[in-house]
Length: 228
Image (cartoon, rainbow, N blue to C red):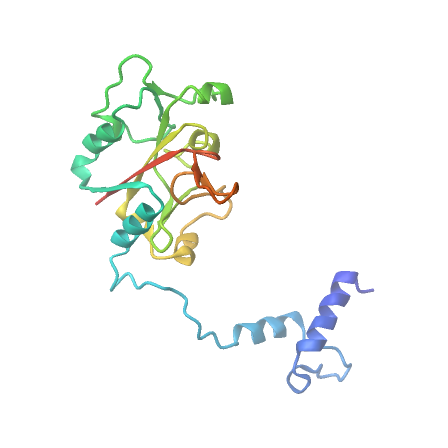
């Protein structure tokens, strides 16, 4: 006996199938099999544009920098050898900041570590403790050129989601090889089993009288260093 789900799917197949092409060879009147439906779907012409930017003809790293800056992020491009100095400069004025597990030690080589300036999330800090930290430094999983978006999958060097939501300043290091042309390209590089956080500029909202207010749902300041 068919389940309700199977009955609904049979009706959909019957309504959308070509009777001449999909009738059961035994003339039972049944619609196409799931395999036939899948094959017909795969054979549909798909002439729509799959990508908006061709990495071969577009400087997608420059495009990402431009789009991220449009969101009011501070964006710098630095050579790999100058990254430690750039990180130290970006953290000027940040009294205490989080360094997640797995963050490359070389990134912080030029940072003054006086007192308890570098904070570790081990054991996990409470929300109240996170609120006493001014900033956080992370890497990322992917960056999207078309939208100026950074995606975290909270792997090594990125920390858990709370670390990038509570502090008021977020410094992100993006390797040029991590920049994807558009969202489909970026999503194809991610592990769907991991959690993902998409960041497009500093946290902001215009819910009240269309007045932009930053820092409501996350960091008020986003600083991006693009390496390479």
